[in-house]
Image (cartoon, rainbow, N blue to C red; front, side):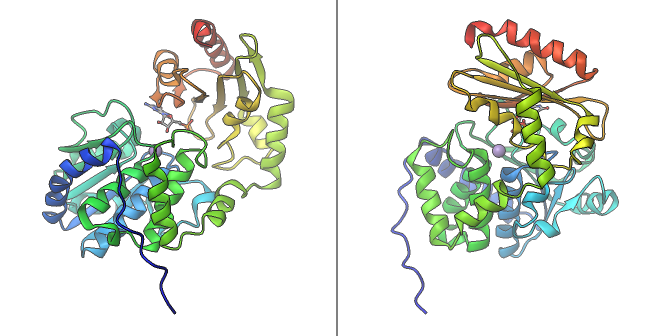
Length: 356
Ligand code: 5GP
Ligand code: MN
């Protein structure tokens, strides 16, 4: 059987690539000096955190390192198919094993988050470790004390994009095999809403071309991620749209809130909240969507914000919701009842109405 012909050398033209090229030798030195490596993503890992961690750990393993992926808590079921997901250690379930790995590590790689506090309990464990730390991330404002070496590119679509760019600089396109390409494609797809936002630079599609050349089945990945609803999840969506969403500021903003009881009624499982907050943006003129949801474990209200164009979700999340994030996708949490949280969200909309 003949292999598909190789792509011509990728000509990645974004300034991000030039900066990655500059920092790659230092990343290479850091990897070369380490043997036992733990790769960590953020709490409630999404496709980008999972894809970046799994691909990075695969690369390190291929180089003969002892590399493991540790996440603070579980990832959603619709990511369980990702190659290597079955080996991911969850700190909240396997604390002793995860902590033993971290205690022995000489390098900890922090992917897809910008400050240790996004790890909650796992953060304290990492702060106690004497291992060197490398951060690779695309969130604004990385905490300079989080790692000795920080690759921070807030313009990047996804951390998976950064991992791909780094691997290409360190090992050439040959460093990315089919399994890694599948994980990287998944993260790039999920962080850009299947290439519907934050993905305009042509480099993104050159990277996608490389992934496809490695055999990625993009249509299957799309179905695994976006068409994996339970019947309950589909009906929850109907309920939210029919009975829960309210529109504000001349239909330029929307808000819905879900209580634990409502989630129980639709047999809510981890991951079922995913994507609901995007739906009100399908209404013409809506620039901001806010979702409030009682956490299923902790006594807090989880806040998700999504916007279009230049509406700064991250500023609203910082000012009103103890959080932050990207311009068009942010989150946070409120330590209060859901009814009080609704009032805070309404105040936030009022305060930002000039921008809506
Ligand atoms: P989601 O709505 O999917 O939970 O979060 C969207 C984005 O908001 C995340 O990718 C992350 O950048 C940001 N985010 C979510 N929760 C928090 C938080 O508690 N603190 C900060 N700083 N950012 C958050
Ligand atoms: Mn990301």
